Image 1 (cartoon, rainbow, N blue to C red):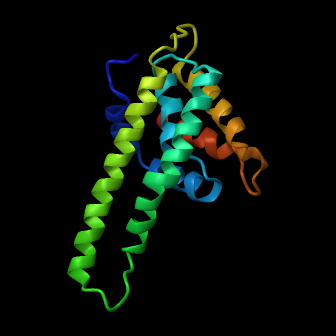
Image 2: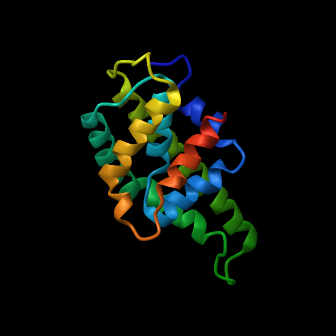
Image 3: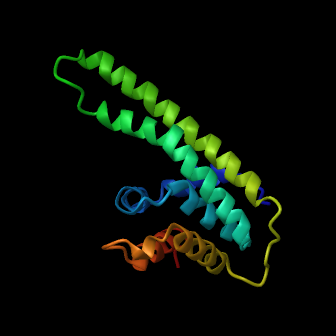
Length: 167
């Protein structure tokens, strides 16, 4: 689909100033999956509008992955940020780093799954990448029913796209 793998693209894009905190806010406040947001944008960057069935399958797989794998790792990593005072600080810090590495590996595995789901999609060359990404992201947001959540604004998704696709 692209010369740049989803993982490599994500690692590069995630370094964009202001993007990581915005993605984490969308995850924490509205239960949106950072990898699905990035996947929608990456597919758009490849000129692909993802089929609804692919987005649904990606959503279902990612929901389960988050519940059983990446979510528990994230919870453990965050808990180890302030371990019980009785815990040996160096041991807790080392454990946190190990959990962080496992969480990152879980993210990479999820992204490989998502990349494979996008391989059959056909590029739509007449669309700008940002437009294709916006369509993909709108489909995911509708599926996640995020617009029904109190406090959610589509401007946060637009800001995400503006950071990924400046200018």
